[in-house]
Length: 295
Length: 295
Image (cartoon, rainbow over all chains, first blue to last red; front, side, top):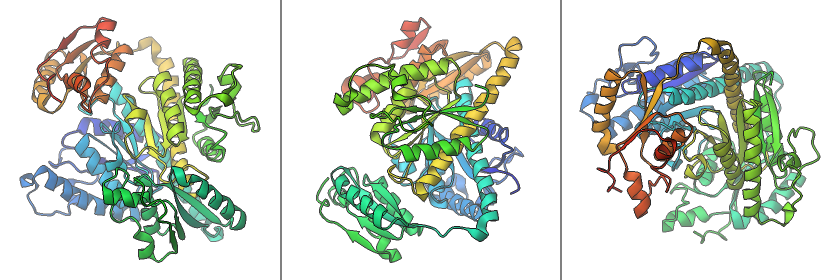
């Protein structure tokens, strides 16, 4: 695209007024364009602002969605939209992504963002669910959540103020990403070699050990970047994800409490895949079992 | 201020590298300036980038903070910083606010933002706590949280990418707020009269009732704005807060489940102050006890 562009995920059947208000806010800043994708259950065919219609996202899939249960529909739209958004991302068609919703809309938008886009790409959701347990939405990613304060059910001056801030935030981030992308293209010839990354897990009692390690590595191996992950469940998941995204060269897994939490039902589990990414991708990993008994 | 300005709350003793990186990101966009306030425990006197020093925020309070417990220090710095930030806000000295931190830093930044600034003012925190229960930080406000993915303990390319997005987001929001403020000054003479707001509480089973009410009010009293609050604890708190901010003219409190949750220890309590703001501010309120028995 020849200008900063934001992809707006919208349930255009149930929250059209709010989506169009947000769209107008985004386009009023920093020369930003918006691509609006309709992810609502009932296709909206009445407004020209929709760039990606329901049938485009669903590839004219002939199934009768109106007969699906709510959960089945959500699973289906997430699957198709994720593929669609990933493909747009690979073509560099947009520089930031935004959505809004209650519990259902937040869940759909967050799943798409988590699965289609890498960490570091600007992502924002205005949500009624942002003041509470956000881990089902954010997971191990950098999805940014703004609490809508009032329900997203009709525009009013309070919601408009909040949507206005969200619009200028994502427009600002998209404009910055767009200009950075353009600069990077110019500099590609004489780019510095990437520094290598070492992942380290930390949590309370292992902090003194990690401090020794980081001091040692900074002093003796300054060409390595160190990534500290707080082993609270999301931290371990984030590490596994970044290993799979090939952004980590080695792992010092000093804090394996998440394993015990997973096995014994503690609240800080990182899921059953914890400890598997390094082996799968073939990078060196040192695992300490010392703290694996703690919950 | 004659340019868009972001107030950056920083623990300049423990996270200086990250704060200075974030500061540079903000100032690189949209002609934004930064005011950096040092809220760390140990005063940083070594760098000129700090605009508001520790002693300025604490009004040269002669107490020996090094002897305070961690919790006492946090209570103390929150109290002083809140007053300081509120006074800067009243002088229109900044147009957006940002902070970063782990559990302690997030708690300090969020308390200051919640207590010093109204809903609708742009607020962002990059936090290690953003993928989990955020209600202690966000509460009933529009504080926006971005998960840092890696621990905020030394800069690396992943954290830099995230801080860069956060910087462009808050710079975008501050630039927009700055220009809106300037426009509003021009239009103050011929401003439209403010619409009146009616607050309505809703939750699951009361939805059909609320739908009837909103249809009726839209049809017969279109000059009223309707604010729907999802009675999940944060929703009720938000309503009470907006009543106290004098942004609500009347209340239809149809969904009082939060009262039962408060009395019987349910998870969706809105605290002991629920139901008090309308009486305190003297606005009309209709309360339905019909759903007050549900938890």
